[in-house]
Image (cartoon, rainbow, N blue to C red; front, side, top):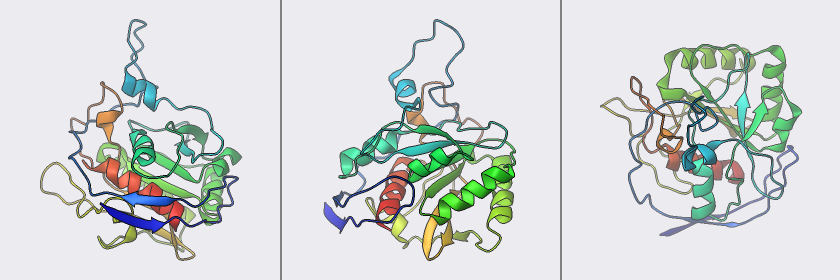
Amino acid sequence: MRMGNRWTKRAIALGACLGAATLWAEEPRSVIQSLNDAFPGIQIDPDANHAVTPEEAANAPGPLQPGVVNCAILTYGNGKTSRCFSSEFLAQASRETNIRTNPRFVSTALESSDLFKCPFAILTGEGKFALTEAQRLNLRNYLENGGFIIASAGCSNEDWHNSFRAEIEKTFADAPLKTLDPSHAVFHTVYDIHELRLKGSRRAHLEGLEIDGRIALIFSPDGLNDTGKAGPKCCCCGGNEVQNARQVNVNLLAYTLTH
């Protein structure tokens, strides 16, 4: 066990106030179970007799909670939203560190002012999409004023990947995405992550969008979904995703609050 850096207060012009705390960092203790892809818990079987599982219940978005870190799950484009992104990393962050989190995502429209109530947000999905001008403007304002986004192509979906890159080029033409070196702090805040594990031999990587010297957005071309915790109907049968995604997401949350 090693002790991480003491938390520092960061000015987040988002209506969320975070105090200082001590982060205890531990080495990763186990390999995340095999991951699959599907809708999250709120997208349950329309069969009225379907029993809601604990994973589905845990991943259903909930209300904003005061006094803790809230994480938005974004609705964007023409109503597109998350596909199979587990919120388990929020609970794990609370268990493994002194970060107090809302264990549920808060469903938030990308163009809404409610986004500024959450210092951390998830942008993910599958298939092609295009943002509205209002969404692009709010995305830029959010990131420029202290917000942080994880963007992840669900199940490594190529169409979503391409659409996301096109939108970032439109919205941040002056700040291109850059591949992050394994020595970057995002890989070492809570867990020391030396590789992003995928099925097969292909290597995964993370890309960062830097604004005023701060990484404000992390993009993973491969899924950071941790879908093994997103519900029993999940199946990434024809795609791929990062198998140690939960630890990566805990690290990114910790990075957000300390940089």
